[in-house]
Image 1 (cartoon, rainbow, N blue to C red):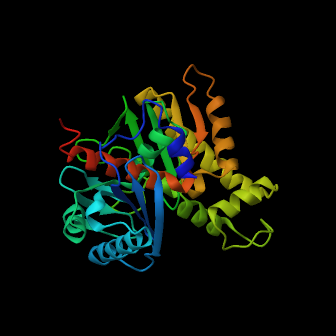
Image 2 (image 1 turned 90 degrees about the vertical axis):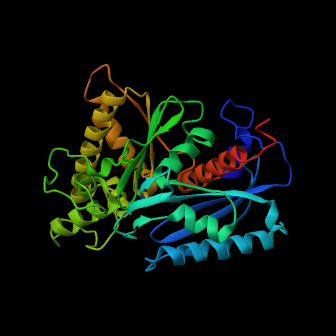
Length: 339
């Protein structure tokens, strides 16, 4: 659990910042195309309460902000926490995010947001300082503070779920790029991918071969009654399960996805010269996917052999990162810690 992981790392050099005040709390939010998750944590990073709600079919940013406000009220009531004890919040959105201005420039096709002033909307709704970032960046931050990359200042977190994204940590700092698109590797051109220009917010070339939706599409396009005993409508992880059981078509699709992902990781390792890649997301965490990708990487037989590991936080990585960012936000505005 995140609580245990957070507590276990307090003595490391990557411990959460201290505010110098007790009985104060922060809010972490993970905004997804299917679910919204909130966590109320103390200033040491220990989660005190959680809340979640479905976002399926909700495309309105103000409606999502309303849900966050409603969930915050529930968390404060559940923990008997006075509102003035809530110091700051941080939220992750699935898309390109201008951290400085607090604007979500574009989200995935699951939500379709464009140029949403999310920080202003949340600060107005909650009445506290708020920071926002791309959800994969927050997952990388979570892994850095309390997960598989703890103590490692140079690594890449790759989230593979419906789509594909990366959080890049360089010298202990997130690399976001001049236009906030660093880590948007789902748009990377790789062998076998379409070279047709992609509209903003639509699936990218790498995603069509490696992302969960792309893998599912490949399966449906190649499926016949004679090619596999598995059903036509199954998820990427179910396809990988079939590969572990020896299904030929499932094995072919797994191998193609793993080979393609190994291209991306190999090229990133050459560019960034980082020693570690952490796989996360519902698809990226499947053991068959990681093992097959590692096999292709090892076959390169060069001195560039990045270490590939699975996320230790799993689906909790985004919330752990949001809590970390919220604590940083609270600390930055705390006059006690600035003395």
